Length: 252
Image 1 (tube, rainbow, N blue to C red):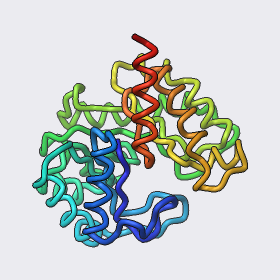
Image 2: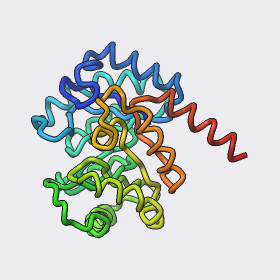
Image 3: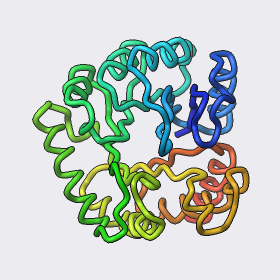
Image 4: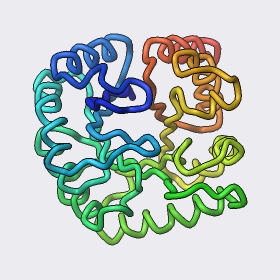
């Protein structure tokens, strides 16, 4: 899953692709590099980012989304926690809703996903970091709530993916615990999506700035796949595609 942010303030690439033409060029490059899905976001979800209204978010993403879907190629995911944006995006051609609040922020989101027939990524999130928290227990509690919302709304289980939410309301130790718990999370019976590209955890572990976190990201994603992750959400598509090809060749 290649990351396409049409935002001025995302933590890694804010402002680089907020013009529609630049966004479309970057999406085409990621597909050529091996992306199977494009994840389009119009609002930064980095800590401290200013919230965005649904109308402005829709105005940012839909012109790009319509062009992406018209040109075909790969499915498009909309990265949003707002039901109105999800509905507009699916109407424009998106087939996946990637909700960083796991259906729990907007009370209409579960219904919106069910009504549109989209797949959904349910991500674990926390408003505040608690270093004393048993993070796997918190994931269990959170996902049980989200999956109950999905069931009651009528979202089929085969359209659900789970994401442990690396970097969202978690300490470094809790992020590592989530990665070590991927086998457990996969046992729930849903595909696991891993989104840790260039995250702050690599700065904490390695002392590296954003532009020097590719090696750490690759190492963590390859270990995540070995532990059962089925989708990786990344900025550096070509490098991950190469690593996966080598891994597949060695496995054969």
